[in-house]
Length: 123
Image (cartoon, rainbow, N blue to C red; front, side):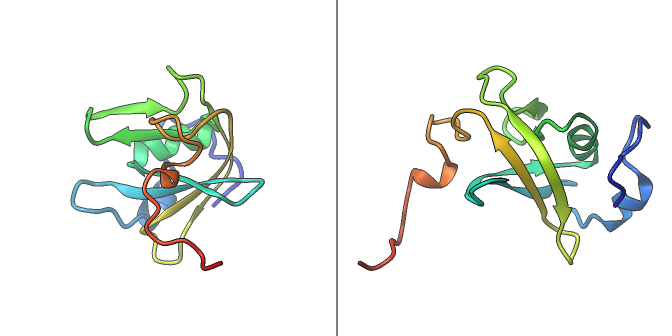
């Protein structure tokens, strides 16, 4: 994938061909804090959300509950500045590395995975 997604108003068709979407046309995006490597959240992207993320370098996702695009931090101020976006070998998952400002989770937790730990490392 090129470093510069260009100024076209849609996703590069070559990138779109690599995506393996679910039945709703979405690809899961694992969002990771770029410096620490901590997983912050899982979100969903379609081609438009991916294109917006690549061109603005702001985490932009598809809200399945609201049925609309949302830019992380647009209302909360907890912005995600995107450093890199990578597609896995199967084309069915994106890895988005970000610099996160404030908590990533809508509950106010730093990570969405802080809320319900199911197994901790043994002492």
